[in-house]
Image 1 (cartoon, rainbow, N blue to C red):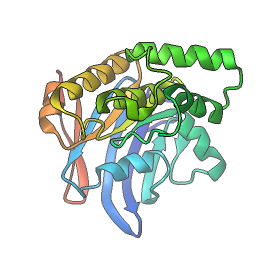
Image 2: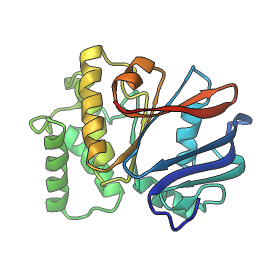
Image 3: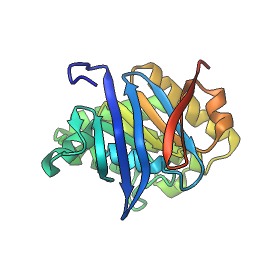
Length: 231
């Protein structure tokens, strides 16, 4: 990878990835380009989420090289980790919403934590993302007043607040029924078509077969790209 190639958002080169005290993946090699939709697949415990955590500078590399959104990960400084994460949106399987406050306040909390100061700007951005996910009338609700699918759509809204270059989605449909899964996947595909790259961890091959994306399989302590699904 060349630093001058600005189309590369994520790159792993001969990377060994650690989780806790153990190395879980060896010799990882792949690139993710601007506008890609990439599935990371494999069985439970195969290292899928460890890749996501490495991209966010949570899991260290044992050796090799990795790059994400402008930062070399093997030697990233602590002061730059927050800068890296501001360029990345994250969608979790278990939502991780703040249950004691409204949807508006959940989203405002993220914006304020990432440097937004003017209330008019915060109000405008929250209105934009809620409209994009079709929940513009739900700002005053608390998470427990929404369905699981609506909560996950709020998580997608939270992930796109800061216009990220990349969204990391860790089993975002794992707790959802089939109809709601379709809603979330259609939303992610639409965001991807607007230019945001998405890396999605899933164990659901039928889902990955149905929706356009590249497929990277984790198995036997390594990973490999098997083919590109044209969708």
